[in-house]
Image (cartoon, rainbow, N blue to C red; front, side, top):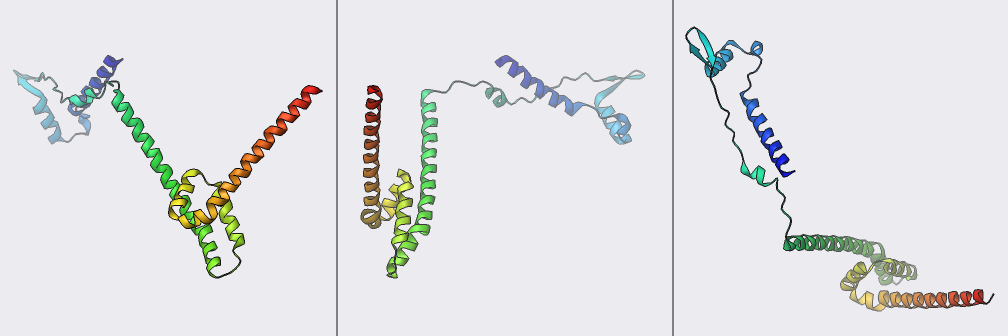
Length: 188
């Protein structure tokens, strides 16, 4: 397969070089161009003209051929590619989480803070903010913890922990109920 690739590349280079030497259709050339081609390609011998024997020389770039052989990547190269891909994904996730945090701040935190400062009823805004915080993934919650430490400690984290406790309790109750149903089904 490698030899075929090399032959194909060489063939392509040779065709490109030959195209440079091909004479255009003589009927489309001017008299001056015809004379130039003629003087360049023919030699007068006695009473007739003979074409000059020429050998086409190729300008071959060895780098093109080096690129044809794909050597297997070393373990280090594979590892660095994986690490780079992993770092890229991590960076992308972090930038997305940051954008989500900014939206959370403008859509939920700012209205809550404004109502609280104006000494108005802010319970609705607080509930919306907590509900949204709970739905976020860990990476967004971590940014919120870092950027809003007081609000996180006083409101958001306690609400999140309470929800997790309730969720765990409900799962345990569901498992107990499933066990009870299975036991009753076995009895019947």
